[in-house]
Image (cartoon, rainbow, N blue to C red; front, side, top):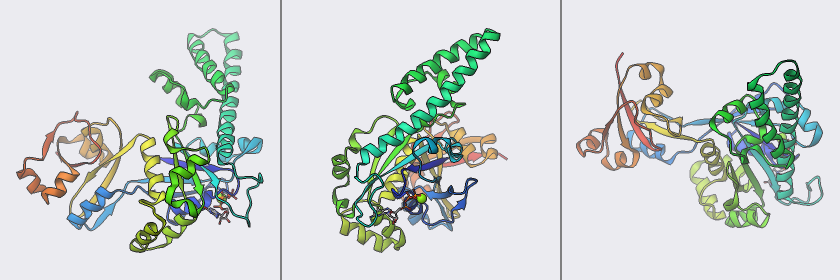
Length: 358
Ligand SMILES: Nc1nc2c(ncn2[C@@H]2O[C@H](COP(=O)(O)OP(=O)(O)OP(=O)(O)O)[C@@H](O)[C@H]2O)c(=O)[nH]1
Ligand SMILES: [Mg+2]
């Protein structure tokens, strides 16, 4: 569960990384410039459950972010950290939309949309290299020995190559489930869900979406598999330093309903098809990450393989109903607890108590 933070030089990647991971000790990665940090997924439902249960421990869902050195052009495509990026499940592309006379953009002129497209093209070219190399290999091999599997792969890679040559990201192409499976082994970068983080001036905090749209990156027009999240890096950096109450006041002063940090983490989480179910009790209230469509018995496995193995039933209540009832027992009395079996498809915001043997 890793998200790589990429972008051109000096756009605010490291600043954003620190904001997301709240200074939780980043570790040096294998390739010098690369850092890994953990971010908590903000969850108002969990906060409210914790206020009700007053548990010893509150555990949020978490994600890892990678901070990498600037990425652009031929050198970027060859460098070793791209190998690490291939292990990222999603990418955040930071684009600079802030003015700073003391630190002008390297290209001379602010153009966040062009910058976003530059990086998109880098990823496309990187994938094109992989595809071309693989096609060459298969063609060479099939001269020696015909293999129907290779025919199939060649046809698929041919489609990929055509798209990439047309400068289209592979995430824009529809593939069948079998094709998807075949493609996973290639770890194409342009197939990764992508979040464009538009780093705006402080003065634009009151109308983030409008400001991003004026830069040609309208959040409402994001393509499938992508999201556009406008934020003010400088304001976010200030917010990250403050205790919660003061951060709230500062956000009000800037006209921000929610921090960009929270919006960005949530956008990543959802774009990846993840969501959380919750467990509540006096020792711990916790959010657990699962994929959309997962069943109760699979969700049990997210907690512990013993619970999955000994699964008997799941007691389920919606988090709002539990809060309104005031306790698990009261929710049961009110008839809001449901008894669900192994095949129940877990919903976002379910609070679950697993009954299991052993
Ligand atoms: N005005 C303004 N300056 C910013 C903002 N974000 C970052 N900066 C400044 O821009 C410079 C570069 O920020 P970094 O976060 O190091 O950028 P980076 O993308 O990690 O840079 P490289 O890793 O060198 O490519 C620093 O001097 C920051 O203080 C912002 O939102 N507004
Ligand atoms: Mg940096």
